Length: 309
Image 1 (cartoon, rainbow, N blue to C red):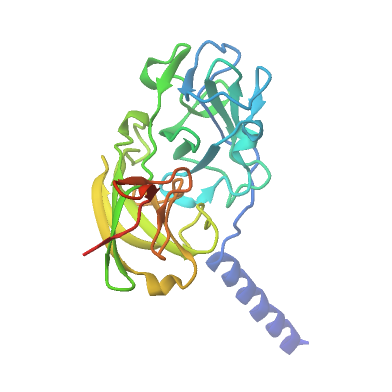
Image 2: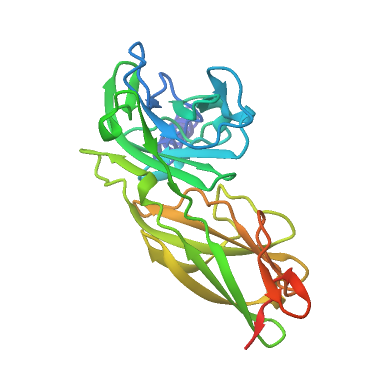
């Protein structure tokens, strides 16, 4: 009997040590923390997102699923593993048809979110892939009305609309070919800072963009943009963007295309990549939204191909 008691005691100690070493990670939280750029009941106390695209939306308060081109993500600023997960922008991003007013109402513990509640600071990134407009807002926690993270006073608030910045996605300016497979990809990234807002005072982060990373990946179709798996860092630019280039061996892609995207670095983390460009290594150059054209005096317009070096 004593031996059995000793064995049970040892098992209890081991189980307790394991519980301490590997704390439980919650899929959600209760009560949920909340973030918004509008306040209720005083709805006039708001700072709307000023996108120019309202097409495809209906009703006075319609989710992002009915609006073309919008993608959005949010995460705990200093720990991107705590993020929106599968809780999509169609559930927390809302627009008013015809007025180009956009606002977010986020519940960080909603079904589908990853790794529990957001505390401290939250970063919200929204991009309109149809118009290449971009917002990146970071705010710290301080309960006001029903919101833990309040963005209604950004730039003064008071029922006004914040201007968007250009998406920091890479815009391919040219491709130079050196031999059968070696290419140099030249690109430009516009300065996204007009769309960046930070309302942080005491959570230990600035909320500003540290820099902009440019990545590539070989894929037959568009790769996932919500994680860095499979993407290779090719270049790092200043927070204001600029021109850059990288060399690539197209043999690595086989028959797949070379995709080029970028991610803003906030507090040392990249959470979501922008609308990508595509370089066809065979050797045509294209962008998912537009073809680049050059004028040949003899042959007329044609798809731009890499120049021989």
